[in-house]
Length: 146
View 1 (cartoon, rainbow, N blue to C red):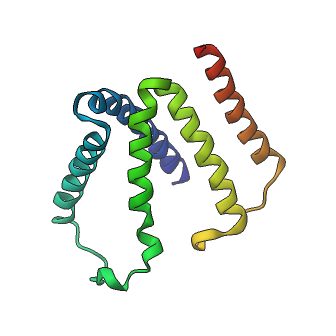
View 2 (cartoon, rainbow, N blue to C red):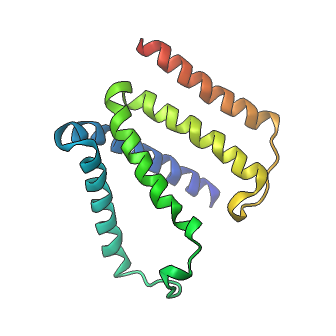
């Protein structure tokens, strides 16, 4: 089962690279904020349609949900705006390697401290080595782009 999830997240990651490649030209055409809004609008519309066929586990008032749990929407919007601005300047590969570096670094902190209700996971040599390799990939990609 875990292998299926690993494959799914790799495929989803490929989708993010595709999205970054689309956002740069779209931002040049309609403006960066409008590109972000249109991407979110298409995604929200698709999710709304899917939600018509998949029932919710439980009906909960939006006011009952802790507000910090909704901050992902804000972070997602910032992420897409940054992609829209950075991708034309850096290229898709460099942009996505930078994103990956940030994601892995913060993910290690979340795992280590057990934030957001996740199980705590200790830092070990292999985890440190993995982030170092990603940082090296970012450095080599940057040097190759100069």
